[in-house]
Image 1 (cartoon, one colour):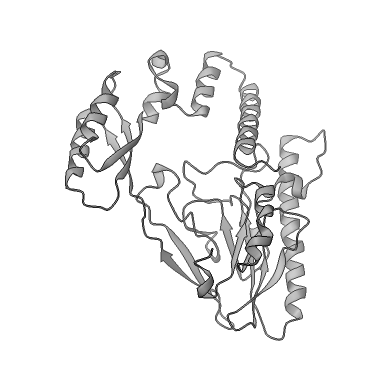
Image 2: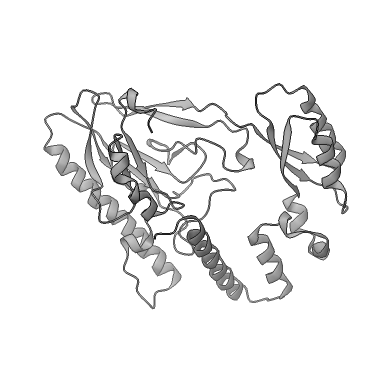
Length: 342
């Protein structure tokens, strides 16, 4: 933030589903002195204002929408079915966007020159391509938000999805993606930020700017012999930083010494093995060998699914309800651990 000051750029920081509203609000006054504006919550704040250009003239009108928690837009009501809750949340989010857009239009009408309206959002939209580290944020109530329910702003900058992408074929609705890989399935994918300009009377022009790789990450997959061969190839690696590795083993047999073998092989190499696991396909297909596997090889959801499978419950609606309750508990635990509001 400090290094950004000589450039004259303004910084607007919006809370996501991982962020603690109270923690961000503690820094608002300090960051305001550094030409930075924080929008932490989805209500009770001024979310529409004019962004001046470097000459001080109005440059754009911003609808700053952070992650909207259901309690930010809805009053909880009992007796609703799952589909009714989903529809209510969808309509409430769409209504919040329309309200902010109308405020932005009224503000733009007071300006002496035309200015584009820019909106933001932190959610999953219909058709967006996700990665392993993208967590569902509206557990059991809303899978994805339809792009056609966004207001007709000149540009809508979205967050939460880690891959850069255009939504609904509309160049003006985009995820720029995360600036760094947040899981190994994103390793090797180009990361970017978007530079958006607004020529008079024309659609926005978007120029992707590649983010340099600061920490090399790679996924290695194969049988033990193939993995050992791939590891040895790093002897010729000449990068400045050690490569972080996720190793996925596809051998059928249970190898008690595999971790020691690979760690020993990696010692003289410019690599660091952060994750060593069996392939997901083998884990899901090998319930009978559960006693041979360690919890560190399984995700929380995989452990739960295996325990549920042992119940041999044929009632699929009941299983769906159990999964829904489990997802809610996991989501609440993540929220308490990562982003407490107080």
